[in-house]
Image (tube, rainbow, N blue to C red; front, side, top):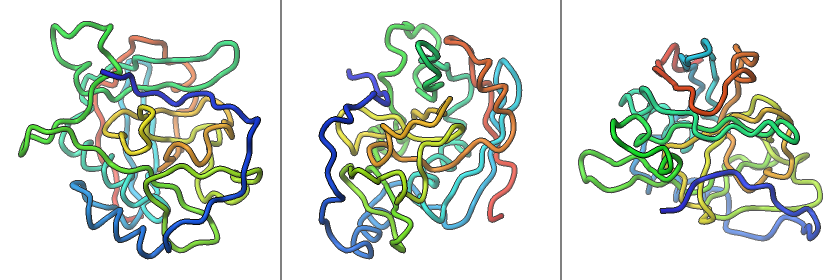
Length: 226
């Protein structure tokens, strides 16, 4: 199986934003066709880790599908005792990544951490969500394919600033499931290619202290609809 990760991408060939379907049509396709609920407001989640407590705020206004998927998985307990299986701090701060449900299972080899997805108990099939990226000038997100351009960061509603909470995926833009990462620094090279859906609002020093192999002991909902 493929590992899911945010890759450092080349900045050599930059293009202006490509044409695509209307935002309204894309929003309908994203939320109405997803197996996970959308979040139309904000929500705050506490992540209790081996190193301490982190509070993240989900942005359902700008990333309703991705934020709703994460909130649903938190409510299901999908992140309990999962491992932070990928921590990249050298040569420069990059990401802390975790959320693979299979990393919480006894007997699973650590070599497989980062290859798992959330399995819907109703169907026993993996749940995947499409890439969701929103431009500040548009009322609804775009779905299904990356966008790129010389000024993408300036146009995104949710860029990869330090503390950004985003979904990990494989090379397929529509392969995000449960795994997430937190940006340890501004990462404009990932903008438009990976879905940011929230940010750390408390406990960034805790994020900085996490090392590979630490666990997310529990994720709990603090507030919905702020």
